[in-house]
Amino acid sequence: MHTDGDLTYEIIIGCEIHCELLTKTKAFCSCENRYGGLPNTRVCPVCLGLPGAMPVVGREYVEFGAIAGFALGCEVSRFTKFDRKHYFYPDLVKGYQITQYDLPLCTNGQVLINLASQDETPRFKKVRIERIHLEEDVGKSLHIEGAHSYIDYNRSGVPLIEIVSKPDMSSPEEAALFMQTIRETLKYIGATDGNLEEGSMRCDANINLKVIENGKEWRTPISEIKNMNSFKAIRDACTYEVGRQLAEFRTDRQNFSQGFKVTMGWDDAKGETVVQRTKNSFIDYRFVVEPDIKPFTLSDSFIETARSKVGELPQPKRDRFRKEYGLSDFDVNTLTTERSLADWFEQAAKASRDPKKVANWVLAEVLAVLNERNISLDELKITPAHIASLVDTVVSGAISSKQAKDVFAEMLETGDMPEAIVKKHGMEQVSDTSLIEAIVAEVFAANPAALDDYRKGKTNVVGWLTGQVMKASKGKANPGTATALVQKRLAELK
Image (tube, rainbow, N blue to C red):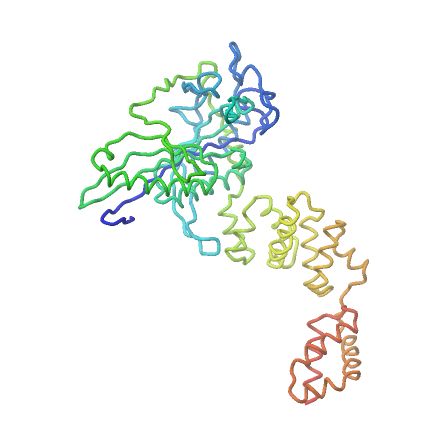
């Protein structure tokens, strides 16, 4: 509960997320499903809604929907159908949208959103999912300021799922976390690229308040804020709308609390919501069963194949990484931001003697290279095997950590394995105690003044002498062994 002066109120938010799927073709035709391109070049009679064109349901489309349902904890219906939702808008070329109404593919799911910050112990809240249904996307209106508007139908017929939550979120931050969790999960299973800037995912937030004043409870009308495509927009829009609804309630609580649902847009430049239309009566979408697509039953094998393709989801993977590899919350959260990164790390970790050091190298060095060069893991010349081998070479004492940085840099440029680079440059570290003792003896004999300083209490001489040993060995002496032998010989001086 929140307070505002003499008012106590609760924020109630439910979200509807539209997510484009990564199928090869559109939902009901064989046109390529790809973002962008020359307008109106990836279209056919089906996605243009021309008379006589017959839609055919893509198997991959339904399978992706089922995989998404399982990933989000839903029940996947074996019997389902498509419906027509009628409304008129320029980018809806047919005058209706093929969607699902009363028999959605998926129902009764849930996700856990983590309310803790990245370096804190996870703190979860359950958000229920009412349904996930299949539908097609519409075209895109292009507006030229002060001139004309155009319509690009390349997006028309692109396969979508709509994920409808229960009104379980109680803050703008939770609404943003919900979309963030949905995006992360669906990217993990390969159902979407999750590109928010390209509109692959859009969120509608339904928000209203339960206000208590002097023991009396009021409900403000629901505002539906449409088509937000960033986590920041969701937070900012819901935050603004809370303030707007409180202000209107204070002005005219009697009439405002009895108002109708309002559809809003978010003006990011002005930082405010804008009324688009008021739903003062039920909008008659005239839902009818899609006559060109028969209701269908999914086989047990289809269902089980979809279930098997979900794989390990982000949170279970984080829990396992924490337990198996002894990593911190911050480390596992970073390593599991993308499935490709998590898989890359784990391949290296399983091939190495020291998975924790592998994690350090991936986090500190590999990710830095990706960010600096703005490239993906696939574009690196090195593989998980390179990192595993490099870590093991250091752990074995063959090279020092400082030398490993030089080896890493050369690996990035040549793609050569660490062993080959170490051998090529004669970098093998000397760990033979008798050899290092001989070098220490030479260094001590050549630097009597330093020994006198040590006898007088100057302890920094230890580091300097060790440095001289490393220099005399051309950097090949094992630093730990060299330090220990220098300290041992100095102790004998006393």
